[in-house]
Structures are given as structure tokens and as C-alpha cells.
Length: 243
Image 1 (spheres, one colour):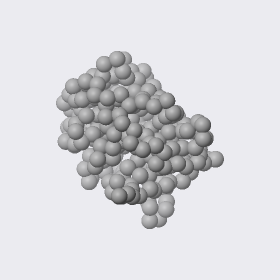
Image 2 (cartoon, helix red, strand yellow):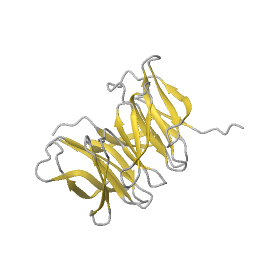
Image 3 (cartoon, one colour):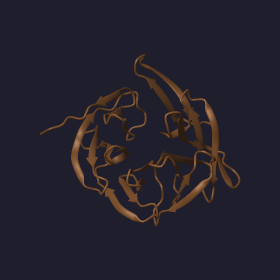
Image 4 (cartoon, one colour):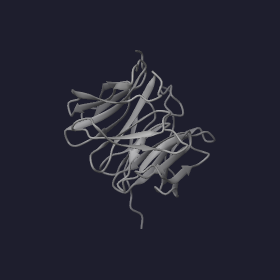
């Protein structure tokens, strides 16, 4: 299996980068000791998807894999994960409509949430309200309830190759995208009900080393600071209170 997607961990003090998860597409902490990662596999055969959800300890030693039903997903599949407010794993296949709620203690599926007329096209993220933000298009994100009901559709034509990250403290969404008009990365701040609160709160150029144009990533760390990546460097932005 050949895969060009990897997850690396950065030691901020040593300024060193180490690849720790091959073919990883998303990771989330379950608690202070365990991390869950969703991965891509190109050889998923049979009735279940094995090896696409893995638990690791804080030293990135594998604890175990968790399997989910394959349903009609192809042999080449990616699984996106997050952790909800109750510590349960949320997991979903790319291009499928089901989101599985999994108990990390035993790997059992507790519930299956089904979206209506939409499929997962990227990251899924839990809100503190219990709702879930799902990337459902190139420039579209959908907020659904735990029953699969559509609560809000968040869309903006300028969000080319957009990625969304949630501030778990406030449920604020940060949409990172490639601004085709200005040929620069930008981040918009959006409420979970779809109201754009601020445009281009952060802007940064694309690195020459980044071969994946239009795939800007950002994340919000527990302090509330925003971290963005241009494919070569990490940028850390601190929130400012303006009165």
C-alpha cells in the first residue's frame, strides 16, 4: 500500500518533527492518555473496515484497532474521526452517509447517525452541544443533530478547498481556504449556525514546498490559539480581545 498522507508530531521546544501515523487523515484526543486516529486504506476487503481506526498512547505506541462495517464503501477508503463531549468516538467513511458512535473502551458501536441526502466529504467534528459539523462539499459544511437532522448548512463560494476546525471552548468554526482571487490562504470565523462573524482573520502565503495547493489546514489548540500551516511552516496566532 502506497500512501502520501501522513500525520506528524511537532516538539515545539526541540523544533523537531516526527512522522507517527502513516496514511493518517485525522486524529483526536480521547483523554490525557489515549488518542484516536482515522486513516486511509486501499485494500479493505470483506464486510468490515479494519485498520482505519487506531488507538494510540501518548508515546504513539499502538493500543489496538477498531473495526466498523464496510457497507458499500470501496476497498480504497478513508475514515475520519473525532471525539464527542462524552468521550465517545465519532467515525465516518469518506463518501458515505453514516456516522458511527463508538465506545473506545470496547470498540462497540453504540449508535449510527445517518445524514439525509448528503455524504461525508472530509472531516467530522463534535460540538459541545452534541451536534456534529460535517464537511459535505468542497465549500460546504453541514451541522447535524445526533438524530441526523440537518441543523444548518454553512456555505460560501470563495471557500476553495476549505477545511474547518472547531474551537471546542466556544463552538466557533474556523474555515481555512485558498483565496483564488488573491492567491493566498485565508481563515474565516463562522458561528455554528452559519453566520460569518469575521472574514480573513488570518492570511498567509503558500509555501513553494507545498505540492498540495488548495489543501490549507488549521487547528485550534486548547488555549484557544489558532495554528495554521502553509505546507512548510506553522503559524501560531493568539486571540486578541478588542473592546
